[in-house]
Image 1 (cartoon, rainbow over the protein chains, first blue to last red):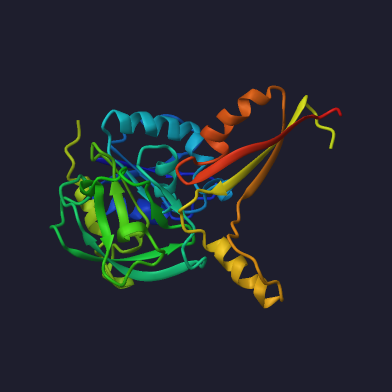
Image 2: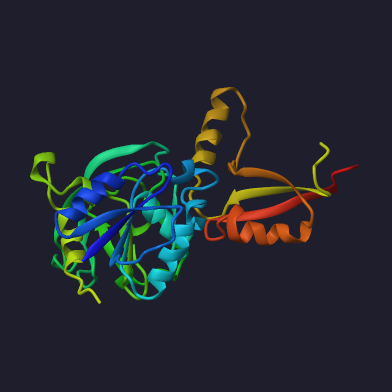
Length: 217
Length: 84
């Protein structure tokens, strides 16, 4: 298993994501201007402020040469994980339902939250059990998840903020969703910042551990 | 303003009705503090102005990039001859 971690101009969590992936498998950085995914078995679109968040979060990054390849990779069933800004990019690319809106508080939030595993039957959560609580930090200004009525089936809700932990006003406490096929997931919390007990929690590692278990072709 | 291309388009982008607009709410709450009463339904959106050769393409530009139709409504409110 080899992870590819995307680096856009304005990414800032790609190195943490790379280190998180390397705890469980091989991993390399991918540059936004390239389009070659040769040898990559899973793609991580990391957090940050790709292309300066110009126009709308994720709106410009979605059209980068590498993302065009990632979209094709995802449509062929390849696993793709989007974290924070990566989640926003995947929504803009229509690989995931819904969109991310400014936090209801209009403030940047940076805190540890608990999220419950709602669907353990995905390539991203197979190392978890239904209802497991994961302690993972969030840090964002634009994290209020919204999907128009009828566009997000319950089985596509992978993670939900635990009661009282919703940091941004997300609809139905949604913290992470997957696509209908289950091979693309996005979440606002940062699992790559929670892979070592040294920083308070290693719960985020279970998402990378899950992905590392995906059989490679 | 005289544009480089033939037509000047102005695109207004608003949060979709029914979606919580905390920016609009914050502005609405701030105005009475300055003595402006009788203000309601404040919403904050974006304005994009562009010179284009073919104004008929602007709605497509909105659908694909300028707006996110899931969460925003857009309106091409003014299309005038840039040379006028």
